[in-house]
Amino acid sequence: MNRAEEAADSAIPSWEDRDSKLRRSPQSRAPGASRLRHKVHLVLEAGRNSGRLGLLFEIFLIILIVANAVAVSLDSIPRYAAAYGRWFQWFEVVSVAIFTIEYALRVWTAPEDPRYVERPVADRLRYMAQPYMVIDLIAIAPAYIALFMPFADLRILRLFRLFRLLKIARYSPAVSTLIHVLSLERRALFGTLLLLLCLTCLCAEAMYIIEGQAQPRVFGDLPSCMYWAIITLTTVGYGDVTPITAAGRFLAGITAVMGLGLFALPVGIIASAFVTEIHRRDFVVTSSMLSKIPLLAGLDIEVMSELMATLRSHMVAPHVPIVVGGESPTAMYFIVSGLAKETGVARGRGKQGNTLGPGDVIAADAALNGTPHESTIFAHTPMRLLALANHDLVVLLRKFPRLRRKIQRSVAVRPRKYRKPVEEEVVASSDASFTKQFLPQ
Image (cartoon, rainbow, N blue to C red; front, top):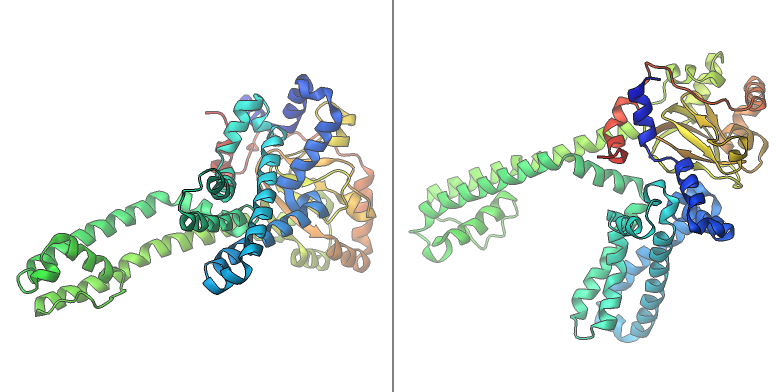
């Protein structure tokens, strides 16, 4: 590994760095509280990856968020508000209390993330400025504003309660992917917005010249003409403002046709980028990809074809737990690219624990024997993983005894310290832009 790669790899905050910093902090004197905070952090941030408790927590919060949106809508209907107003109020109080506790727990467990472990106060404030935390704050802010400012407009505060639906983005990969796509394509979308504004002004000015004399009440000023241009470009066509001259109608037809093409631009940009991002995250599993995994090398075509049909591919961001020590396994994982760090119980094997890389297998022994995971394994860099669910593994092991023997032999060998060759990059080129978020400026 050359110096550039070593510098890039060491620049990414690791969970070992977090552990060493926590040991030096005064909080390390309370190991029970530290373990509790670590467990709460896994449930809040890892969700279903942290085990059954994390999965139940995610499901509960999603149901609560949707129920809040339904309650806000029903509360706006007078007959429901009169009949069930008290129940709506109690439900709002309970919901705000739950969301407040969730928000406070996330702030309390922030130092469990190595990016927010240096300064207890400043890093927590930086964590609270993250987009998801801002959304969580907006979700509970209207209730406290109404409590301490009774003169505030309650209708506007009820409207802001609907922003709680944005909290689902934390638990929905599709929503987070769409937000990421909008961020990546912001320049192209801003360009289409500028084009729309220019076209609106040109069409409005042309209609002002053509129809201003014929209909001075309707097209006698540019703002009124701009309203007509926006309605026509969006092909809504309310019909409240229409030209009466032949030239005006001809211009209206051209404006409507241009509107169809103009609004197809952002739709095409977003759709294309969204599909590209989905393909990047859920990459296609190929036989050549499987042949590079030592555990699967040498298997016959029948076994490989069955594996390709059952394996599920996905991306894992840095600092996200893949498996959690002490939890029952739900799948075993094959690393395609990226690095993972083994912590928890595995720290007893060495100061730095084990580093896993491409070709290594995660949780093979736990999935094979049905025992809890011995240690917690986090993604150290952006990773591409292949997941083999437990029920699919059971079917494959019964059908192909040779595969069972290979897995048993692999788990009998202790994980070795992974070291990348010189020619390998720290992160795959497709994930380079994502990694830059975690490198120091």
